[in-house]
Length: 433
Image (tube, rainbow, N blue to C red; front, side, top):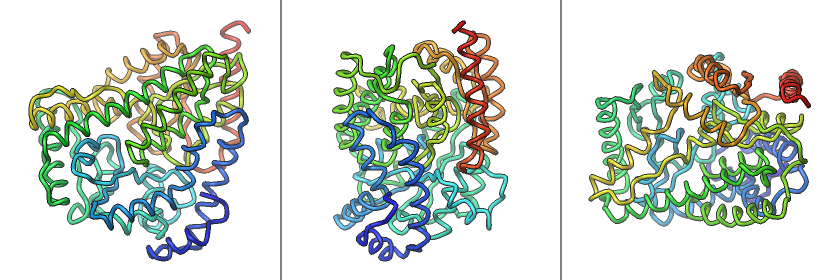
């Protein structure tokens, strides 16, 4: 996402029927934030260049790649949530990526139709579509939504659940009846993708997709394991970039590049090369996902003396925790194994959700965090209300925390920096520094 889009990119956007001038302005805004909050840091691992390139090419090179795959006969599916079973999409040869927007620049175009006091993630995503600046919309064969929150599921009603839209009904509890409901949703999803591709799901292809996704999850888990080091060799902001790329890049290529980066990170840990100066407070960021375009909170934490060592979010541990059983028997057994793995994700949409509290406290201990920043997007009621229970669980475990409510704009950077700085100072006082 360069400040000045190339003529090639502008021709691409015009070919897709986008508002080229508006699109360029929105990308300029995102690019400026990325360069200031991410790329400006010195001493970054060499392997991050690939992931930076994917971010920069998300509205250019990656779009051309999707177009090429479509010309070869592949179908393209846009997703909005980590509950969408990627294994089924891969097994049927489908190109897929997350469509979530993380920029404030597109939000006004959504507020002309949708409520202002609605989740900025939903508004940013819709704003890109409604303003004619999402390059993937014209290429989409199917979009897949899910019912993780009221804002999303009512938005799907407005957009229409027929034709090019599919909704996964996610249960709100995790009992036997809920598992049965979810398993049938996954089976129905598989049938929908079969119809889209005009092909049947085959056991060996699904097993191969399961192995690929498990390999991807293991690579992400390895990256996070390296972040447990006394002096992490990867900043939290760079780790977030890797997680954002995980949602939009080709899974096999991404995994290979991450495995290479992990080798570099391990060597840096071995030789004592840290991502940031020593003596930083180890911070876990918990709560809402930080999708592409949103690096503000990580940047602020690492600007005022902290280092983010783990993210308890869908752009963090929730994306890669838990593997699918590769030894499941037969096609139906594999489908059940896939459904079971996704059911372990501890989103705030579930109630009761003691599983998430226990996992967060355990993760904070594993990464030896000094404090937790709960990053909550405005109007995200599930995470905001659940922040009460999270704060109580962390307090009982002796872990200080602070809740930050924000959106994708830069208008609150000053006040947020003051609050986060004060939190860091309280952690230093607590440790007697």
